[in-house]
Image 1 (cartoon, one colour):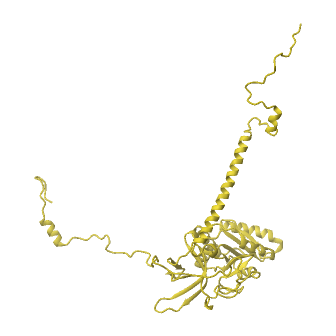
Image 2 (cartoon, helix red, strand yellow):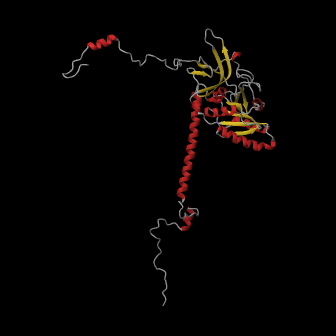
Image 3 (cartoon, helix red, strand yellow):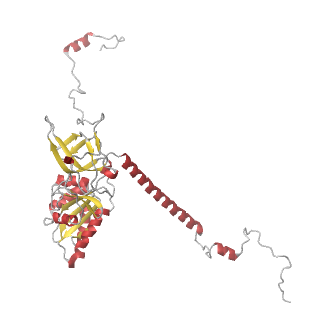
Length: 381
């Protein structure tokens, strides 16, 4: 007779080694229907990744808050050259081909810009030489042209925030410009660079931009923006000059830089000559106790630093530039104190310092007469 299986007459009991009394359906609801398979780490790794990303976001937000707090403290404690007195962006124009028209490229930007009327910031005509301050796309900028001379280009690069290179589409970079670019790259080239191509035909616009982009990246060893001189690209250039993000420059954290907008030689009695220089401080704050170096002239002491109202202050109603000869007074005058630096920056050489002299005859004779007592069998010396 075949064996038959009969159900147990005992009460059903759950397995004692199972820690939960939840049913399979309840477990699926907890895990939202997802069952970890072989090799999956389950929800533990996902929770860890979420916590890590949350921590990264918190750290990034904390760094932004700390940076803003430090900037606010610098603006509050700084003397000159920080905060609201940091000055406008300096835009340096330089031609890299022989037929490039730098004045025309500047004129395209200044034709729609807001210019101050006269005053201490120098000539303001579109085609005039020297620095030109203006408001472009809602931002304060100073346009200056760098010549094709090495020292002038290096001085201009040391204060420039954005470099605008002007070239013609049918020419190549000449030897002088190549030398200036290499030297500037090794010295102090700005991080934001844009190339303006003049005379580009509509049919070859894309190929010309691509070719010049590759050429300039090889010459500058960094990313370079290339545009044409068309009306649409001029608007792109204005936005680039006003709102492009600038990388920090380590040299500005150690030294102060000033682009002179106006230089006036004052008549002073005696052999001394007084020079009044107007402009905006770039980089580290400048104090009256520090020395000022003027390229190609030398190092001088500061008599006083006058802080004038900013004609391009954001939200300000002033439209005219400062006229120092019209009887206006400076907002603050800083004069040197007891800690003023001297012009003697190196100690004078003393020719006798460390010199070993030969003894005289009297000293040698006295040394021979003086004899020391030594033990027996030892020579006298």
